[in-house]
Length: 235
Ligand code: UDP
Image 1 (tube, protein in one colour):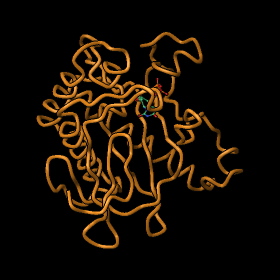
Image 2: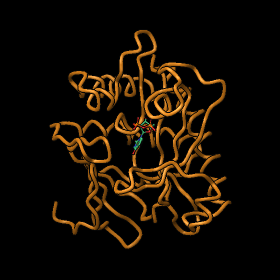
Image 3: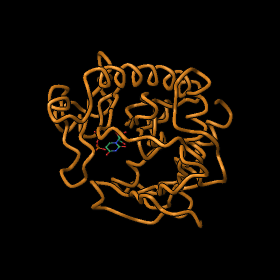
Image 4: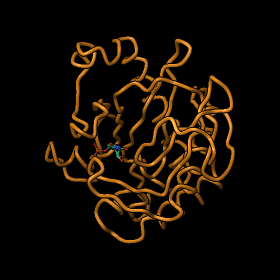
């Protein structure tokens, strides 16, 4: 861990990379929820999320999605392309849950008649408020072209992930993506893991994701381990 730290986030650290075009991303064991208000160290979470996210990114890359992942270094670190993160979170939903259920009064688990996409401003301070296209372009966070590209990529990623996870006996309820700008392109960054997705066992609806931590439902890592085991057999 000798590299210079560029930025320390809630669940990952960004360090100086081996060259000027890259960073090293290190996964931490910290779990947070409610914009960082709930926080706990969960030994082993970093290793699991790193393995899960790397397998998912490798699967997406094999299927034509450009991502920041260059090379896995060890069980919590990878070299990634340097990118300027677009300050919105892109959320895709197949099934109602979480804030969507609460805000719109739709019971959790209700299948949605169409896939939804939405953007949230990346700001813990402001509580990641939902923000629409015209507001994003008005503030100058992203251009209209960038928004349509991110939305199209998010839908393509959803299609690929739904195919993969259904083979694994897991329902992909919803997930959050982050994109970054690099060399004039927009690529998928950050992570895709049980921290950023809702995964429900297809047969039992058992939660295999961070809701177990958010809602104090028991051993968080049990679900993460299950997701990794099934990914290793299917990705
Ligand atoms: N999500 C995330 N980071 C956030 C907000 C949401 O990774 O800051 C993920 C979350 O894990 C879920 C999806 O995005 O898979 C939709 O989350 P939702 O809007 O329902 O928010 P929550 O109920 O988690 O507050």
